[in-house]
Length: 278
Ligand SMILES: Cc1cc2nc3c(=O)[nH]c(=O)nc-3n(C[C@H](O)[C@H](O)[C@H](O)COP(=O)(O)O)c2cc1C
Image (cartoon, rainbow, N blue to C red; front, side, top):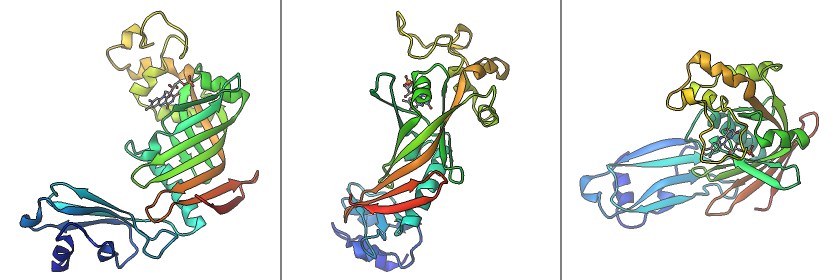
């Protein structure tokens, strides 16, 4: 970056168009700042391009604080077609399974309780597969949500990535997979770590009433992780909830207008996509 960038960073306001990237790449661009301009300047920190509304639609975040040595400008290429949005959703879901800090890593899973009440809770997104059209999480066989999805298998999942400002709401038909009879669940168990496995060693069923605060862990592993061998005691309680996605609702928040779209799969997995008013 040459001297032109110094010009753009002078003063309280940075004209967004100044930063319009000439290419449509996503990625980071680093601007080295001259020492004398480090304090008290409003700095452009994030920059998004190309929403469907405008060729160079943009959202910007200004930070009015001591500026760092370098300013990172995020250029996120937001999709402009329904197909691109659909691609983006599955890409984000897949990335989130292995990325703790990804916004989609901790979705809310909503089920219907035995008496018809909504029941929502956070779970860890463990798997997402575009070809199979499913997302997965892990749980204890004795948890109330397992009986709930056995009785009413339709569930709602809500994902939000604050950085991308993208919400995805998905409707999924849940199957409860038992490693005793299901190879997919056995494979999932093999991928769990000892700290997760310890949870499945709980002596009492989750959600049972107890007389005092209880960690619901065997005495022997209260203060340490189980060994690999000990952890096998959790296998009988381990279940995979595999939700086959039937519909998804996408919302992207942007300063120049939110974008919304809906994706519905029929029984054969054939996709119908449509824009929605935000
Ligand atoms: C950050 C976070 C992650 C969680 N991940 C899971 C999970 O992956 N599986 C799970 O069964 N419960 C998970 N829980 C606990 C659930 O939110 C819930 O409290 C518990 O499963 C009981 O739900 P139920 O009574 O509706 O079955 C998590 C909670 C938090 C706060």
